[in-house]
Image (cartoon, one colour):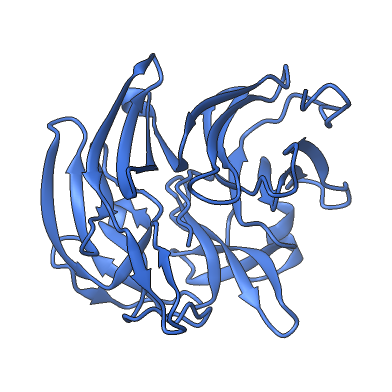
Length: 310
């Protein structure tokens, strides 16, 4: 379950699903596949994807890439919440820093802080860390612990952190109630959103994209994707395809980028959906669990070498 959390900005005019549209793609993507991060040049699809980072261990699954500085990204690396760390990685120097143990980080530029999840004494907590003060870690709220799946297995259900507006995030508490947290005033508020996992926020429309679920969870890839108005908490008309893994809203062009699953055979493709034209364009084939867009990628030949993961 992904959110992505993550702002991807593409300069693209959408009128039809043609090769002309593809030629208008600008910028670059850093996308994660399992334990690797690749650089994709959107302006020249004849170029091979370039490996820019690889976790030291194949179980170091990467998720929730966040762009924070012109040359720095933050992401989660690890197999599960007990073994995952939040990593800061400099694309230019290839310097890697473990910031804190936890998972699903969400970077908030306004306060230069991270929100993330951590297991504390058998309970799962939403945490906050000021990147200017690594001693500032504080718990914000207790979140979902064990959730029973229809196959009888109990597993933690951790949701990506969705940012709405300039001062608020959405999270699910331990009773699976979706709540708002204002990180400026430190206030928590209930919402009327139920059994729907937030995936992304469309600010101009004041709507969120979310995946509807039923309890017990069936862990199916056929979950219904809906759009919900955050003022009424009612569903609105939605043109998105139902099967995808992550989604991020692109405010500059009023569009979404998402990874759509298709099977058989099992695969993912990267799409861009425009609200203005009500159309989707396939950007590329391939499995990306998470991705972040960069306007420029000024580090040619940055590919990993023997020194990268020491």
